[in-house]
Image (cartoon, rainbow, N blue to C red; front, side, top):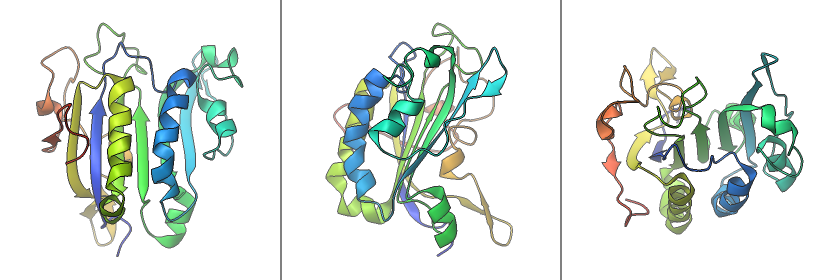
Length: 227
């Protein structure tokens, strides 16, 4: 099996822009313990990477290698005991959680068992009033693991719904990426918060709904936690 060919139970969550950001410590410290049982069910150790900037200095915040321990979460989360003052000047761009870590995935030539990405729609300067939604969350579990651990998957979907005050949750089963050329792939799950999730054109300020998404997604209502 090639890196991009396994099927994934994939979820997209678009939150309310006036909800407390997921990258705030007071929010994340409640969320990550719910994600942890599924992360631990993955085939290898997880890793985290977060891209954030110091706008006044025009440079990226350096976190070093991040794992999945409380001390690592405190390094990148805004307002944590480890960076309560320093993080006031940070601008959050995105977060990725890979289980196992991307380095192990590359060695095995196999995409992760569990993947979570959080993108900040206000990074480009949009205010809460001008944004139709924020953040964009993509959560994906390799379908074989999702079949074995349905309650853990449902728990994560439920946990993402509440703090984001989700305006939309969509589900679809899809491969990690679409074939491109002889052995490459494109439209990877890991890239969706950056490109490929939405149709071209403005996505804020107009009518909000599933029509903004490039592909067809199944709607998950508030009563649903999994398909």
